[in-house]
Length: 406
Ligand SMILES: Nc1ncnc2c1ncn2[C@@H]1O[C@H](COP(=O)(O)OP(=O)(O)OP(=O)(O)O)[C@@H](O)[C@H]1O
Ligand SMILES: [Mg+2]
Image 1 (spheres, helix red, strand yellow):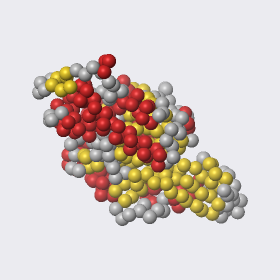
Image 2 (cartoon, rainbow, N blue to C red):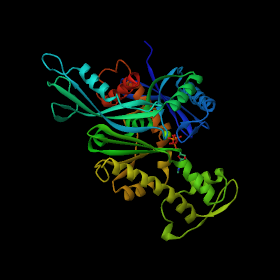
Image 3 (cartoon, rainbow, N blue to C red):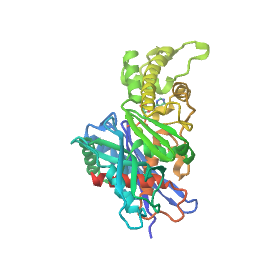
Image 4 (spheres, rainbow, N blue to C red):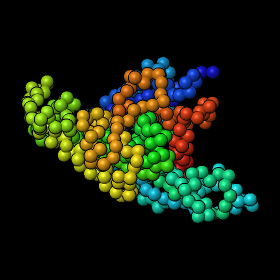
């Protein structure tokens, strides 16, 4: 029998990335066997604005990954991103009618289903469903009620919704690229699957995937997703600010950001002159730092606001995990630490083998996580799969279920 392979495609604002993996039975972990990327001009702030350009970019990234992996790619788990993606809390309640009052997995599905019956505007749909905890006859904080006994079963859930026209554009771009969608996931859940440890998910941790057009935020506590949100600000906004502030073009602004961009003050506070290679323009390093700092500060203000909204400001012992290309900005870890008053680190992919060293970059965390989710969603999980995050699998399963319900 041919070994099965799993595919993640991250349709990012700056690039589309594709990763192919397979189960490595020797180490009982996923192993990367191919990857590809292609610049994407068809997105704004995480949402599709030009279907053909996105389709073309998907095709290129997929072909590259196919060539390296030596396998054809027909389907993939893909991400849903953009300012139109929002998370809301929801509750469901059902009565247990079986004579012995024992909760079955069908009852759990039924109560989850009840929590997805929310009043959504016409043009919105549910993309993902996360059960935070269940209550049985008033007893709260039950992780899994199956096999317990009771009459009134309730669920406290977090539901992620997205704009339907945006979802259809995404579907169309994949269809044009000849890729069937296995599952959808918000970018942040995928990034968390790639870099967050079980301990961090239990303790209470926020992950920030700072990309090009967006910052994806996800909060885990007690092992479960508590909150999902997308802030429509990312690295592209820093580049735009530099272009305006330094009165230069976007290419030079990006070059300045990548080469000299930092949030750290110069040695002994001394500013220096910096020069671009392509255009030969000169700028003052302090000006560059201040422009970058004001946008990063705005971003962390918004993150802080989100944490206050869910009453989690300074209340996450697992701290902050940063991923995404803009997490490579020097000094951002220290900046986040001071601003959010929590321990902060850059996420590192763990428990993956194969070509992992060639994709060791925070920009690849989302797509690696999507490949893991694709693997977790297989009808038959690999034998002895205790290393895999089953919560993740269940949550994505629910996402599909939620979509069907919708
Ligand atoms: N060393 C660096 N310093 C600062 N920014 C960087 C660095 N390297 C990459 N970036 C920025 O990271 C961004 C790309 O990140 P990433 O690939 O995670 O975005 P994306 O997934 O395409 O976008 P999104 O998630 O918003 O849809 C770009 O804005 C780029 O300028
Ligand atoms: Mg991204």
